[in-house]
Every structure is written in structure tokens, then in C-alpha cells.
Image 1: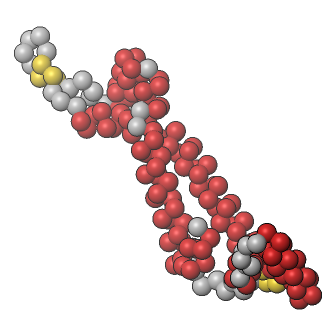
Image 2: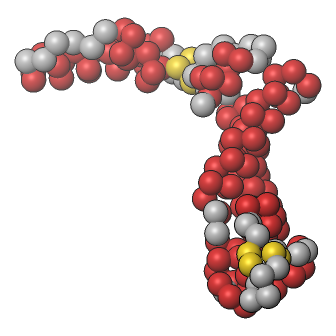
Image 3: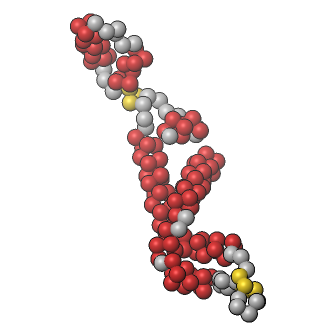
Length: 156
């Protein structure tokens, strides 16, 4: 995620050297001696470079992780609060006409409050709050991540 963030923004990121040159030389000599003792091929400079450089800007990393954490928390709260309404609206939109004993057509759910109480009485509070929760959470999460990307990239 961090590499995608660096590629998609105009933030200048320069890796900073963590050690002095003599420390790096000693470290490379120690690694070469260990590889000769074990009979393995010595590591290349590219493989060793992650030991010497600080590649991630700590402020940017914490900014991204903080935003992502807040996005997840807001998504969880919003999904739990609005899921009963979404369940009822889906039930009302997909209901079929039923025939009464007199032969007349009627709808089981006539309004939002009536639908909430009917689902609560017939199916319980679990169906009201947990019905379709996972797909809704994933949909909200995708929308939130796209919003943060667009906001960071084009607006901020």
C-alpha cells in the first residue's frame, strides 16, 4: 500500500542512510565471512541495501495508517447503524404481492417503521442487524478507500 501511495502522489521521498560508511563496510565484511563459512553465495548490494537505508518516511506512514484505521472504525459504526434500514428497504423493494383469504392482493410491508417492527417480531434482532452485513461492510470499505485515494491525490 505504501509503494502505491508513493507512486500515486507527488511526495518526494529520498531514502536516508542509517549508518556511517565504516559501519556499512564492517557489516558487509561480516556478512561475506558468514556466507563463506556456510558455503553460500555472498549477498548482492541490492539485497543488503535494505539494511542501510531508511526507505519509509515515518510521518507519511503514520498518516496513511491513521487514516486507514479511522476509515475502518467509521465504516464499522456506519454499517451497524444503517444496516437495519438497508435490510428493511431491501425487503420492501423485493416483496411480492400476497393474496388474502378474501382474494385481495396486499403487501406484507407497507412502511419503514412497520417493516422494522415486523422483521424484529418475526425474525429477531439478529436478522435486522446482521442480515447482509458482510457485503455491505465490504462495499462501504471499497468506497472509503477510493474516496481517500481521490482526496489525497487530487484535492489535498
